[in-house]
Length: 436
Image (cartoon, rainbow, N blue to C red; front, top):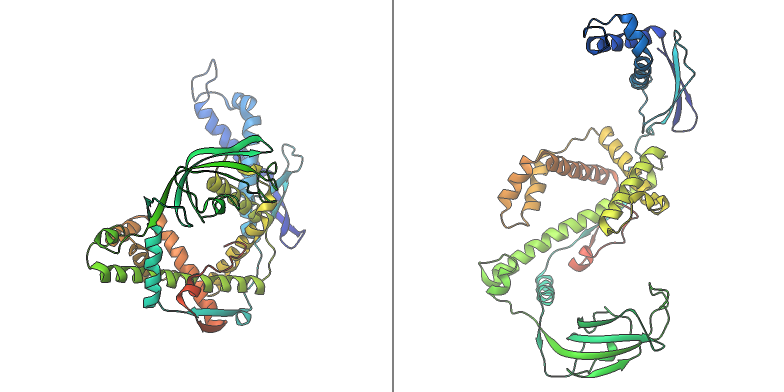
């Protein structure tokens, strides 16, 4: 087999492969012999058909099949021989083939970029330091109570925070418009659910009252036919309900799976969850900084095949997330290209760090991560056992741990400074990178 390789760009290779006629004929004869054992030809018993008849009937198809298989086989033999690492399937151009002569074809494909990850010392990391204080726990208890607010009918005028049950009919220039009317709608004043001015105009209303209000649709309203227009809504208030925060009692604690220990036991459980959230938030922010730093220090060219595959994955994810009667391929590729490129480049860089430093998943860290994830459930032992019985889930956890080890490897060489902050600042979402 003769192989020659030409570099047509930084990542593209044009490989010419010549397959000797002897190998072609061997493969053709092998297929004809297999066909002869099972061929049914009138006038002959199975397995007794003369080879001359088999050749006459089946040689063309056997040769075509052999050529296709040989192209696949010899392509992979050639890339191994040439120490090439294809990043996607090749585009194959067979040259005109003549029986009795060698087969020659050209395969064009991209290879993975070859590089060494560098610039660790130039990466600046700000690592947050925070603790969960008593005041933070108190604040979280208030949040949990507000999230479980109940509304009770109140015989008074509506205030911000009250829940109104309303009927309304909307018109623009005297004409009703689609989506502008509803009955029995529950609306919490101050929630910002309706267009600006709608909820404010209902403050002070009482049950049984009818009000005519004139809010204006925003200029950037999603329905362009309504954007910027003044509407007239006739609103009937059916009821006014005031918010009632639940008491911190056994019934409330039981909603969160805490049945023993009273208030102190509940506070301890809340603190434990907050501490877990804090650790995860700090770890995530450090990881994002590390990944941003690696990207900045290691600009590499991305194989088009990998980028295209990642764009398609993101298209599928978008359709699954938002639904709708749309096929993934109908979404414009440019919507996802920047995010896809970041993910592909990071994948290549992380893989190279693993290779350079010969990293392997630390099984003790794998066990600790599974136990931490399981601690969020009421029966953690069962969750741990489930993970260890599920190979796919275990491999996913090992991938997470390996990525954490990559981050730790970078931190050992990067410029790291610690910064003391409050719990709220530490868990506050950072500005998200373009893709993760």
